[in-house]
Length: 493
Image 1: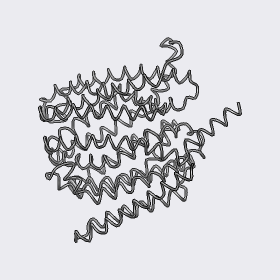
Image 2: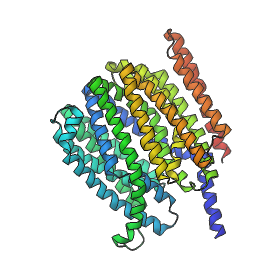
Image 3: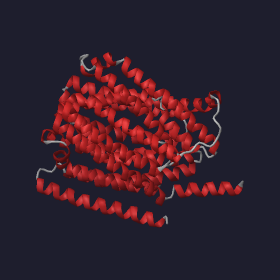
Image 4: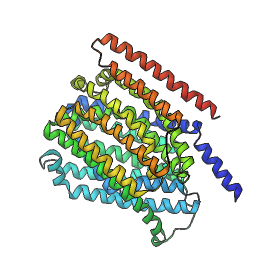
């Protein structure tokens, strides 16, 4: 018994070493880079073929789709990852997987029914008229495939099947791209929804194939009543998460509607274009956290000392990864807009730079944001993530847009994420005695100074001096990050 415990502890310590954290984050990050390239190419075609108005329509369909997905999935995705990763007994793990597949099939059907049944009110609320009702019915098919596919992805994440997830994501994303672009070209804005369906269908197929290849069921099939306790546990935690996710996506939806009502649909398209490009850069870090960090954190969540060590190590690595990305975003914003979008989006350059600064604070808060959920503290997680954080986002974003116009949404992102970072730290310190290590705090400060310096230099009146100083900051940031990643990777060998 003692020997098995020691082996398990040794495995956990190995998984949470700098070397393995860097490997896991960089591996998933590499996959995300490819997926980001796919999304950027798709965004480029949308921008060229459909323009700002098409970007606005696409953003509204996507935000509506995401809201329905979050509601219909009942929050099972993260609870599946947590329970599959936490289960050390193979028979219990199989029961969890079987239950998860059944539940996600049910929630996929629920998503289709909701989207189809509410097609008329969704069309009127989203676009101000009922002419888009039939597109929402087609969107319901995409929602169903998205929910079912994400359920299978969650199981793969819980099993820590890095290579399987990577291959399925790459092939599925590429397939969706190859099908989606001709739809935009042939049907213009009428091709947006079929393109969304094509992407979700491709991902569902490849995640299903990957799950069959990596996991073979070994035990006898049980009756449904035997799965009820597992289903209850998944649903209780999932519904709390779902509530937070639904509120978050509803907030995004409401912000888009507020921008459309107090601005225009072009403003929605410009805002989403800036948000999309910014998210492509920071999304590598956030997706790697979700894929690799959360399953690792769930394994050791009961031990506060190990949890503190893991969160602080991940925080350091996040600072080394996000700082160069945001410096490059701020420096190259005009070029990125020209390459990834079109000249008609040139006006969003200042907005993108503010968003880059805001994403830095979001990345800094991410390792702490996972703690309450990994702990299974449903009440605190819902209040913190579902109510307080989302209320801040909605109020600050709407007020700042009303006061300052489109650039106000950039100010809002900075203020919102800085406040959330402070909030997460206070709550986790009080509940779990979490505090920054001196090393993680130092790296946060250095990363903040470098990105903040680049941002300030972007406002200099002399373009030559501005870009020279930003280039110097970028070089320093990349060298600093690369050096730290290299020495910590080697030190963990």
